[in-house]
Image (cartoon, rainbow, N blue to C red):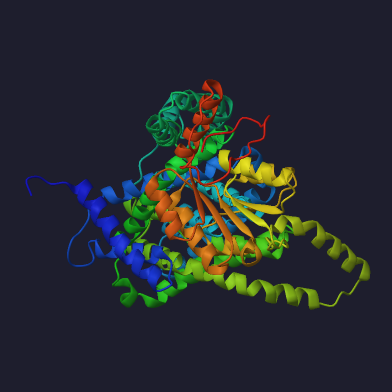
Length: 606
């Protein structure tokens, strides 16, 4: 080659191999992320053949973490965060302490120094942002009560790790248990006052910087960021809007890390959370989704690159002990903590499964521990092995929790009640907790219409169905629109209709019609294909933006496809004909005029 291109080769090699092995994993009915991890091992330095740039891959993966946390922030309001603080804060702290204690015990058994054992325990205590959020999103749990608790728990863990990353070098330098540098501001204050301020000053300065960042975001950011996005939206340029979304997500995250010492992921989360108060949040989430998915894949590839498969042969028992702490010890602690707070069994199982893995913060802590001379390299290898294996096992953990839930609930119901009054109190508490469990049940409707999407097109269709007395339900992926529908007394399900489980909730087999009002033709084709296979007699109406999309949708089972541009043109022709008293042929029209109710509220853009 005429010149080296490590960035291009790393991205191309990582994404191409991730696609190949992700597709193979999907074919074998395994999570695609297993394929992504295998791709990372193959391009890593511990296997023969091509080796990707090990310094670039983690940085590319960090962009995926930033965009993912920004997307979560877009669906997670400050009210939601504060609503779960009563369980997320004490629960996360207790779980971190328990997992750290288990890791310290294993390190002490192996003869490691106290500092290294504590770093090892901390690395095993914090869950991966990417894995946890991917699992919640796939199961449509992010906007539920249990999902909000899991995300709030994750935010508390991130804050604790931010504090740990500041305190570990300080402890190493003060205690002489390593060769870590002293934080410059602390050193300057120590010289000013003539004595060593120690760890207390480190904690105080870190808390002040984090509090200052949060205050700035809540006071100025929640006004400036939505105002900026509205100004960009008014330009009418989709390219500028998409660029603005990325600039805010990456810029705030980078600025938070450099100026306030906050993690990149946490900075991006708060940027998304303040933008969530704008009506443009749904559009911002859509625009950032493709890049989020692409860079999230690079995260898993970068994890695989760090893994040395030889450790599976050299240290099998130590790996099993590490996996036990991550998957069993930490999950069991979270399960018991959630139950102690009187939360439903389903919530406890979801939280425990969500936290039964480790990820990006664990790698950062492991690298810092080795760099400071606290953690042996063997400890870093065990952390990496534990991370990859726990990530692979995480979908299985969710599956087992789903299977265990009916058994545990049945056993709980069969327990004899010693005190009738106590039994009555428990029954009342269970009734109060039931809504918090967010259990989703299939609709009882039959012979109904199913509306996919409640944006500017879907809202008009829904209003006409409601005014005509037609029984219908809506499938929508925006929690704000779901809340609006439920406030109107319209049955609605949260999720992506491409997922078969979501369509099953709509009782597709007995429905009379299906209106696909989303603008994404690729997803619309998948929905139409699945609907036709389940209910051959159902009427399927869809929308398109080109003749090619019309043909494709009809090929996949749609009966009628409305192309927006054609209908707009015919509407203009109708109006012009009224003014000029001309007769206009309508051979192009394939459906009767759509009835659009007057006096509807302004509709947001999709």
